[in-house]
View 1 (cartoon, protein in one colour):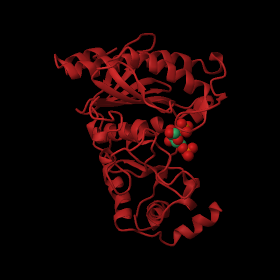
View 2 (tube, helix red, strand yellow):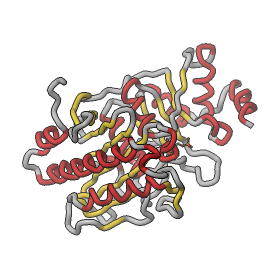
View 3 (cartoon, rainbow, N blue to C red):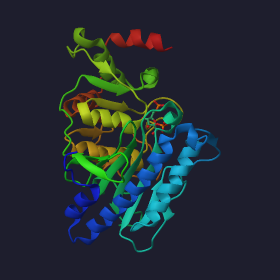
Amino acid sequence: MAAYSTLREHLTGWSGQDALRLAVADTILHLADAGIEMARIIAQGPLAGEMAAHRAGHGSGDMQKELDFVTNKIVTDALRKSPAAWMGSEEDEEAQALNAGAPLAVNVDPLDGSSNIDTNVSIGTIFSIMPAAGPAPLLQPGRNQLAAGYIIYGPQTAIVLTLGEGTHIFWLAPGTDDFLLASRNVQIPLATREYAVNASNFRYWDDPMKAYITDCMLGAGGPRNTSFNMRWIGSLVADTFRILTRGGIFLYPGDGRKGYTSGRLRLLYEASPIAMIVEQAGGACITGTERVLDVVPSALHQRVPLIFGSKTEVEEAGRCYSEARSPTGGAALFSQRCV
Ligand code: FDP
């Protein structure tokens, strides 16, 4: 195997003697250890027990599964050992006070993509690390993040990480506890012909979103003069990984369903960390009308419309909003199919 730096070596080089960076590095290493433990449980599938079974009650309001509960405990234990004063988790209704006086505040989604647990599709743990500053340290805009990343449990286990100096991928070497830096400075291609959206919601979308997707669907004969492909894994970490690898655009807008005015995804432990990862990889991330990293949060579990990926394509979707566009003729056909 080529000589790759380990995650620990990379973090040691990055942090030097800077106290805040040392705290961030320590926290990431504890989360990486937690990721190894979770990867081993997930790799067992049903042999580890009924991990996709539903449990009662849930912090963010979404349905909780057994593996959500197990991973939340593992991540909480890891953060208790870290220099984190506060933790916000998708699985806990309220913020948790951890180590008083510690310098960091960490938001986590211990298990993203949990509707895929029993389908053998990649799932992951997303984290966002901020300074424990201000009256509500967990409720900071994403631009204040010191580091963001996610651990993906798939055919390969890997950590996608940004420390604000590019986005890197560290791969877990099988049979070891070492994450190795084999993908440095990942770059999302500027342009793409591939979009990711849950198209079954078309009839609930606003006009700009309908206009954007309709134009993609009209293909080479439509206003974009381009044939598009579509992919939707339905697991944010997996869809993001594909976009980091070969480009694309991901869209989960607000829609007309009850509770979906601001979409489905959560600002603090999904959209903000993904936005930092994507921007650091040369991509863009917006709500439709605003840069996601500039959204000022007001609640731990708040949702946000999310559009990210290849820069020129995200700008195209943004133009549909700034110009308040309406769908062209093709939309009528598609709406009829949806009813
Ligand atoms: P899940 O509910 O399985 O945890 O954040 C939640 C999420 O998955 C994302 O990973 C995924 O992108 C999205 O929801 C899928 O939503 P839809 O089922 O509405 O397509």
